[in-house]
Amino acid sequence: MAVPSEILTAVLLWFVRAFVSSMICLVIGIIGIKSLTHITTKISEFKTIKGNPIATGLFVSGFFVFAGLVVYGSMVNPFFLGQNILIGSYFNFQRLLIVALSFFVSLIFGWLFYTVFAKLTPFGVDLDDINKSPVAVGIFLFGYEVFLGLLIFGSLMIPLA
Image 1 (cartoon, rainbow, N blue to C red):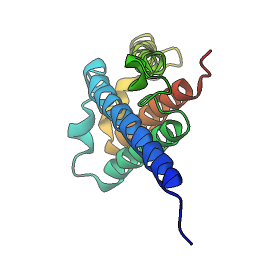
Image 2: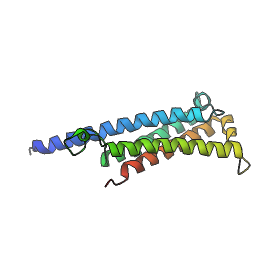
Image 3: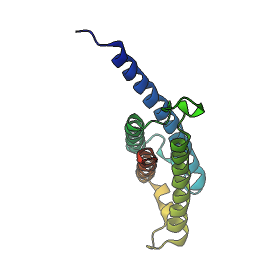
Image 4: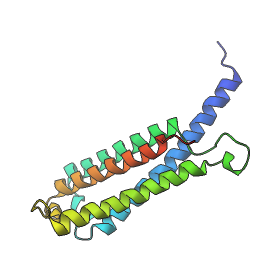
């Protein structure tokens, strides 16, 4: 049974759209994780988890969850190769702007949460104590990656008018 070339072209175009959108979002995620390490100055994330298999596994697992959310969102609503013929035919700038804003929101909330929990200690717990355990740092990174993934996924799912 032969598959019509239109179907193959459509599937290939869909794959390219999802792949490029996913790669851009994954780069945004890497930048977000690197930025988190600058925001949380008293937590040395990568230095602490290095050499600890559980902490490293948690970090990598969090990145897999992040990547899964990003790839799924990009498959459903990619922002690369839009539907019109003008400059926007390559990028849906509205969607890309929303994704970029969600990235900055994650950094603002990351900084805000760190400031509240590390400096103000509303629950009497010092957030900087997680630096004492590589597993705790791995869980912290896992949580941030899921948080960032959900924000980017949400930004990819927001309906545009």
